[in-house]
Length: 304
Ligand SMILES: C[S@@+](CC[C@H](N)C(=O)[O-])C[C@H]1O[C@@H](n2cnc3c(N)ncnc32)[C@H](O)[C@@H]1O
Image (cartoon, rainbow, N blue to C red; front, side):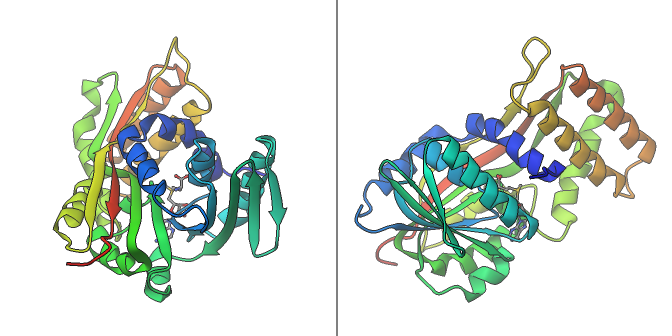
């Protein structure tokens, strides 16, 4: 199956995300899931699921046993690739996958996960879905793409009392490229890049802090765990692990695209920045970091 640059980016991102995910928050989720009755499949909704790499990670790291897992994404092309990729990946792990048309069921020792794909915008889905339908809502590298203060109160009725929300890699305001290059006016350019997240009509460059502040103030949410999950990509002996050089190229391209569309940015400055940072990736010397947060929230059993 052909891999588009976007899909290659989602695949390349896996090893970066594996390093970044906050293990304390992950372990808190693991501890909570152990309290759910094993006789019932866990009802899971993942928002902005992409091709399903978070579900694969949950299986790889032994988090899920019995579940009905809904993968929702607005991008229609991702379902076909995702189903194929997830199936192939799972079979390579020694598991069995049964395609039942509507659903793809993954079987393995102690594992039975029924997956279902939904192509929809999360904002429209949450307004139509039945209340109290899910035990766990996952949103990985997604929450900074929506207006959290508007979206989270609309999402919350979907959770059952006692249900959990696991929100990960929520961007929060810092992008760093090294080695320092004083001639690039990089701080000013990155400030414009962050501003583009605030003005594109959805999401924000401060989503991490907004989500945490929302959760601490919202009477129907409890923060069970929270912590940083920064992306940090760096070369060793001039080489990047896995496909992380491509990941970096994609990030540099994304920043450049935002700068090019910004009338407040001198196009020559943007071009000089792009060329410099592309060359840094090619020569295996670019270091990149992005500050992000992971949150584990719970809807209490009794609402105050
Ligand atoms: C940064 S990607 C992360 C994908 C996946 N969670 C991962 O980490 O591999 C964000 C995903 O959210 C999807 N998306 C963006 N806005 C959305 C929306 N409003 N509703 C549903 N999906 C959306 C995109 O199509 C994309 O697949």
